[in-house]
Length: 190
Image (cartoon, rainbow, N blue to C red; front, side, top):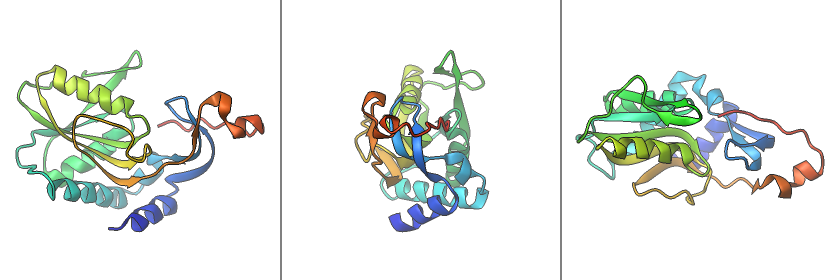
């Protein structure tokens, strides 16, 4: 699957939007990846997640992975589909007081996890998930994301695999030309 195939799939499923958006990071952008639109199509989403697993498996031995973990909310379905492709269990971290915590599941010392997420810009939720895994005495094997909006600039201490690296224009709110032009701001969610 080529980058052009992936980009075309994102556009055809309305997962890649154009406009004036405020991202969860607080930055503004003229492009937004809306994972929910892609995830409306289970076979397509499952195929993209299987492609992520294929790329991971070509570089690392995944036979010793214990499970997949995803940050809520955007990563849950991606984590599930990655886990399906790996034939591994899937758990997720949930927001509580705007911080990720483990409420329903337990991470045990010595377990090995793949972290799955839909999209990263700065990687804050992924880093919180890394901290939960490592803090429980478990190991992060790799991080899988459908779209790396940082174009490779987000940095982790673990291998990162994405289907697409894109660098849409990003602005701090005070420097945003769309704000200066009084274009309506959309808060698309994650």
